[in-house]
Length: 210
Image (cartoon, rainbow, N blue to C red; front, side, top):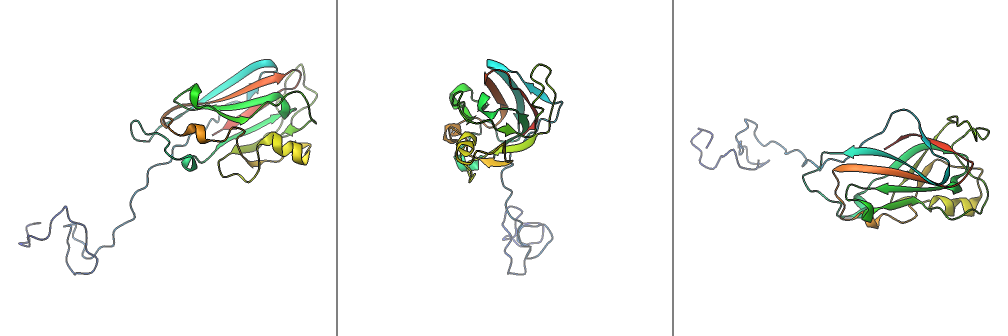
C-alpha cells in the first residue's frame, strides 16, 4: 500500500484523475494517463549504390530489406495495415517490366506491383533515363513511385493506357494484383523487391527503395 497506511493505494492501480489520491503510488496525484503505446511500424530503406535492372527477356534483379521490431510470429492481419512499398527508379520503357514484392513468408504471398502486359503500347519512361545508353548503361534521374492499398491511381500500366504520358508521374499507384495476398504473411524478416525485364534493349536503375 505504498507504506502510507492506505490499503486502497497500490502500485498496480490505475490512476483516478479526480479523487485527490495518488492511486498508483508514483507520487503524482490525479495524473492524467498517457495514451497507450501503439505497435511499432516496421520500416526499412535501401540507400546503397544505384542498382542496374538487367536488360533482356526474363532476366531478373532482386534486392532485399530486413524488417524487425514486431512481436515474434506477428503477421499481417488486415491489408489496410500495409502502408506502402516505394522505389526511386528510372527506365526507358516501363512496359518491359514486371515488378514484384516477396514478403518473408515466401512466393505464395507475392504481390505483383507492376504486371508485364506484353510488347504493345506507347513508350513511357520511369523517371528521366538516358535513352542513348542501350549498350553502355548510364544512371539517369529517378522519380519515386509508391504502391499502396489506398492509392487513387490505378496500376501503372492501366494509368499509362488511360493517359499516355511520356513519363509516368511520381506518386502512389495500386498494385496490379492488389495487396490482399499479403494477409497472413510474417512481418519480421526479409522482404524482396524483384524486377523482371521481359523485353530487350531498354534498361534502367533503382536508386533506393523502402
